[in-house]
Amino acid sequence: MWLLLPIIAYSAIFLYVRHIYSYWRRKRFPSEHTSLSWQFLTLAYQREFRHVEAICEAYQEGRDRLFGIYCFFRPVLLVRQPQLALSILQQSNGHFTESKWDYVKGYRRFNLLEKLSPMFSTKRLSAMFINAQHVADHMMQYLAKREEQGLLELDLQHLMRIYAVNIIGNLVYGLDVNNFVQRDHILNSYVLHPSQYGGLQSFTLRGIPQKSSLTYRLIDIIKNNVEKREENGIIRKDMLQLLVKFRNGNDLSSDKWQIEHAIEEDKLMCIKRLAKVAEDLMHSALDGIASTITLTLYEIAQQPLIVEKLQTEIKELNLKDGQLAFEQLMGLKYMDMCVKETLRKYPPVPIIERVCRKRYTLPGSKLRIGEGKTLMVPLLAIQRDGRYFSEPLKYKPLRFLHNQPDGGEGQQCPSVIASFGIGGAQCVAQNFAKMVIKLALVRLLQSYDLELDASAMVEVSHLPAPFITSPDGLKIQLKAREILRQSNYRKCSI
Ligand code: HEM
Image (cartoon, rainbow, N blue to C red; front, side):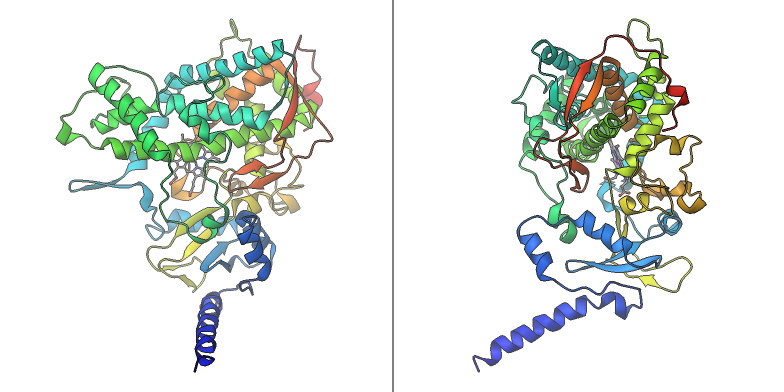
């Protein structure tokens, strides 16, 4: 009898696991032949399992447009073809809803992100630019101090994470924070580690809300600042101001920054919800901004001709008193191509993920994906696929010269460059992201040349945003520039 019990228990577990791992075969989808392996369990136990890399490996297997895989106990459908991903995400009409931004107020239900999107309009961004410039000034003052002390060899990943945290602190939280000098500020806790560190959890338990220990302190910051703006009529041109305007039911698409107050019962959003929006914006923004600047610098430091070309493009702006205007920044064409190329090679959101809410028949087939099942578009793998980009691991900004990436094997496939998302759920803040990324690059390249230690190990992991995991981060020697040499950049073809 005692011997029988473990045998029955073992058999039940075995049959259950086998049942899960045969899901895609039973539904007649092409699928991987996997089960729980000892290697996977060991990596998971040692917290070294990298789910983004595992999904990219699955992308390489076979050639089917759709491929069923298993993320631990979760059946996931991988969409391998960019056009198919585009048509699913554009035309699936509510089959793959994102409930995170759904918001209910009284009898009204709306998508918060749609309502907040005017926050990122060009008009609003150009007004916020002055605050972004203050953050860049803080960075340059910090570097100038290090220059005086002869300390210009530094970890640029760390520097750019501080810059990104300061940008969010200033523009989302409405704080005049400068973490380059204020090392004990609460937001500094986001500098050391990626804010969305996924690891095994994102492979297995997506969708379970996570409360960070910082959340409550961040709510206090928001509460304080919202009260100041509502009670004292303080106007600061930042996102918090627009969030407070929205909370008071004001129209965000108008030009005004003043808040027209609503009585407490008519307010659209409580402080806690507003703080949650700010925290979500921080999580969406921080790693993307920091990694894109860091990895652009990493790539261009290996190709001095690109640096020279960028520096000449900046010089040709003929800045009056060194003052950079928003329009000038956004008009930097070659820098735009460099940022696009970094986002292609290192997309900060390497996998787009959707949960099916209503059974959906996949375009061009009779196959159906069931409610509750996950669909993934592996952006990182697609954007490094030689069928769409020739020499995908090479950093070549001029791929985007005619606003179209070059196709490997002679193909042209503009839809595959989707670092800011595909279909209905694109990044609302892409212009904001480009503004602060380009601003940091302009300010750094205006004043410094870059020298990468050729012997230094630089290892980039996707956690899920790209992050340099080598102990020294991105160690680069900055060299103060004296004069801009006459350039031969127009002849170069990178
Ligand atoms: C280089 C920087 C960035 C990249 C590459 C990027 C990329 C993306 C992508 C691919 C999505 C769609 C995700 C999906 O469909 O599941 C997205 C959504 C979003 N992004 Fe960005 N983003 C960047 C920066 C930012 C910044 C700076 C902000 C805010 C200030 C921001 C706010 C958002 C928000 C609110 C969403 C909505 C998605 C959600 O979390 O539900 N992003 N972004």
